[in-house]
Amino acid sequence: MNPSESAAIVRRYVEAWNAHDAAAIVASFAPGGTYQDPVTQQPIGGAALQGFTQACLDAISETRFDYRIDAVSDTLAYMTWVWTGRHTGAFNGIPPTNQPVRVEGVDVVTLDAAGVKTIVGYYDSAEVLRQLGMKLVPQPA
Image 1 (cartoon, rainbow, N blue to C red):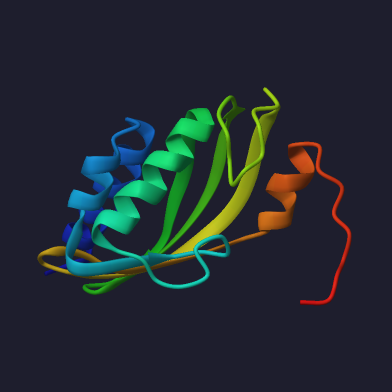
Image 2: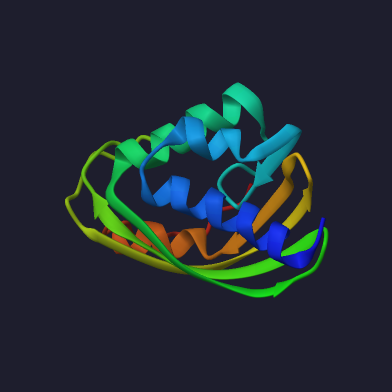
């Protein structure tokens, strides 16, 4: 695999998000591939990944990722992105607020010829809650 093939896999993954297609998001992963971000807290794949992505799409309508692949090699890509949408469905137990959402983040993606092996996403998950009108109060675990 070469860098342009790796970039094509990453583009297919993001465009599946922009098409609001949870099945296509999961299909962009290699068998056994996983996704992790501050909300998932651990890697998820397969049916759990499809459920998670569908829940995100149901909660944040008009989901759109504007992205840039900042670095790519045969097996690794770094992507910065801006996620926008509107909170029109329940999200992690939070009822719809109809508030706009705009979050910036970065994904570290490992790949092989079969698709995405891993994605680790980094973003400020508390920013999402603040945008939904939640007041964050630090508490012990």
